[in-house]
Amino acid sequence: MSDSLWGYQPSSGHTAGTDLSGYSVEATDGSIGKVDKHNDEAGSAYLLVDTGVWIFGKDVLLPAGTVRLIDAEARKVYVDLTKEQVKDSPEFDRHQQTEDPGYHAQLSAYYMAFRVM
Figure (cartoon, rainbow, N blue to C red):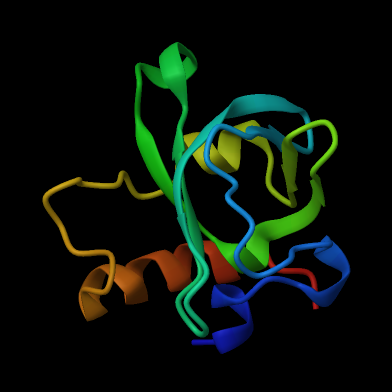
Protein backbone atom coordinates (compact mmCIF):
# COMPACT_ATOMS: atom_id res chain seq x y z
CA MET A 1 0.00 0.00 0.00
CA SER A 2 1.37 3.35 -0.96
CA ASP A 3 1.19 6.22 1.52
CA SER A 4 1.25 8.62 -1.43
CA LEU A 5 -2.31 7.53 -2.20
CA TRP A 6 -3.40 9.05 1.12
CA GLY A 7 -1.69 12.40 0.63
CA TYR A 8 -2.29 15.24 -1.83
CA GLN A 9 -0.06 15.36 -4.89
CA PRO A 10 2.31 18.35 -4.63
CA SER A 11 1.01 19.65 -7.97
CA SER A 12 -2.65 19.57 -6.85
CA GLY A 13 -2.56 23.07 -5.39
CA HIS A 14 -3.89 21.89 -2.05
CA THR A 15 -3.18 24.07 0.96
CA ALA A 16 -3.47 22.39 4.35
CA GLY A 17 -6.40 23.74 6.32
CA THR A 18 -8.44 24.74 3.26
CA ASP A 19 -12.09 23.76 3.72
CA LEU A 20 -13.08 21.84 0.60
CA SER A 21 -16.63 21.10 1.81
CA GLY A 22 -19.16 21.97 -0.89
CA TYR A 23 -16.62 21.98 -3.71
CA SER A 24 -17.79 20.27 -6.92
CA VAL A 25 -15.86 17.14 -7.83
CA GLU A 26 -14.95 16.56 -11.47
CA ALA A 27 -13.87 13.20 -12.85
CA THR A 28 -11.90 13.05 -16.08
CA ASP A 29 -15.21 12.70 -17.97
CA GLY A 30 -17.56 14.97 -16.04
CA SER A 31 -19.04 15.94 -12.71
CA ILE A 32 -19.46 13.28 -10.01
CA GLY A 33 -20.79 15.22 -7.03
CA LYS A 34 -19.75 17.44 -4.16
CA VAL A 35 -17.31 17.18 -1.28
CA ASP A 36 -19.33 16.41 1.82
CA LYS A 37 -16.36 16.15 4.18
CA HIS A 38 -12.59 15.96 3.96
CA ASN A 39 -9.62 15.09 6.10
CA ASP A 40 -6.13 16.56 5.75
CA GLU A 41 -4.45 14.20 8.21
CA ALA A 42 -1.01 13.16 6.94
CA GLY A 43 -1.00 9.61 5.60
CA SER A 44 -4.80 9.39 5.74
CA ALA A 45 -6.11 12.39 3.77
CA TYR A 46 -9.33 11.86 1.85
CA LEU A 47 -12.47 13.42 0.39
CA LEU A 48 -15.92 12.07 1.21
CA VAL A 49 -17.98 12.72 -1.92
CA ASP A 50 -21.76 12.72 -2.13
CA THR A 51 -22.39 11.58 -5.70
CA GLY A 52 -26.00 12.74 -5.62
CA VAL A 53 -28.55 11.13 -7.88
CA TRP A 54 -26.33 9.97 -10.73
CA ILE A 55 -25.52 6.76 -8.85
CA PHE A 56 -28.45 6.89 -6.46
CA GLY A 57 -26.84 8.98 -3.77
CA LYS A 58 -23.86 6.73 -3.10
CA ASP A 59 -21.16 8.21 -0.87
CA VAL A 60 -17.59 7.40 -1.81
CA LEU A 61 -14.30 8.00 -0.05
CA LEU A 62 -11.61 9.22 -2.43
CA PRO A 63 -8.01 9.12 -1.21
CA ALA A 64 -6.35 12.53 -1.52
CA GLY A 65 -3.81 11.06 -3.94
CA THR A 66 -6.57 10.80 -6.57
CA VAL A 67 -6.89 14.61 -6.57
CA ARG A 68 -5.20 16.09 -9.63
CA LEU A 69 -6.05 19.76 -9.13
CA ILE A 70 -7.96 22.04 -6.78
CA ASP A 71 -9.39 25.22 -8.26
CA ALA A 72 -10.26 27.34 -5.21
CA GLU A 73 -11.66 30.18 -7.30
CA ALA A 74 -14.13 27.89 -9.13
CA ARG A 75 -14.60 25.74 -5.99
CA LYS A 76 -13.83 22.56 -7.93
CA VAL A 77 -11.72 19.49 -7.22
CA TYR A 78 -10.48 17.51 -10.22
CA VAL A 79 -9.67 13.81 -9.72
CA ASP A 80 -7.71 11.37 -11.90
CA LEU A 81 -10.63 8.94 -12.13
CA THR A 82 -13.47 8.39 -14.56
CA LYS A 83 -17.12 8.43 -13.55
CA GLU A 84 -17.21 4.65 -14.00
CA GLN A 85 -14.21 4.14 -11.69
CA VAL A 86 -15.92 6.22 -9.01
CA LYS A 87 -19.24 4.43 -9.55
CA ASP A 88 -17.55 1.03 -9.14
CA SER A 89 -15.57 2.05 -6.04
CA PRO A 90 -16.28 0.53 -2.63
CA GLU A 91 -19.27 2.27 -1.07
CA PHE A 92 -18.64 4.34 2.02
CA ASP A 93 -20.61 3.24 5.06
CA ARG A 94 -21.19 6.22 7.35
CA HIS A 95 -21.21 3.84 10.33
CA GLN A 96 -17.76 2.51 9.44
CA GLN A 97 -14.68 4.26 10.72
CA THR A 98 -12.61 5.82 7.95
CA GLU A 99 -9.49 4.70 9.83
CA ASP A 100 -10.62 1.03 9.88
CA PRO A 101 -7.53 -0.85 8.59
CA GLY A 102 -9.61 -3.34 6.57
CA TYR A 103 -11.60 -0.63 4.82
CA HIS A 104 -8.46 1.44 4.28
CA ALA A 105 -6.76 -1.60 2.67
CA GLN A 106 -9.82 -2.28 0.47
CA LEU A 107 -9.80 1.32 -0.79
CA SER A 108 -6.05 1.30 -1.32
CA ALA A 109 -6.22 -1.89 -3.40
CA TYR A 110 -9.06 -0.49 -5.53
CA TYR A 111 -7.58 2.95 -6.22
CA MET A 112 -3.95 1.82 -6.65
CA ALA A 113 -5.08 -0.08 -9.76
CA PHE A 114 -5.74 3.30 -11.42
CA ARG A 115 -2.61 5.14 -10.29
CA VAL A 116 -0.29 6.50 -12.93
CA MET A 117 3.20 6.39 -11.53
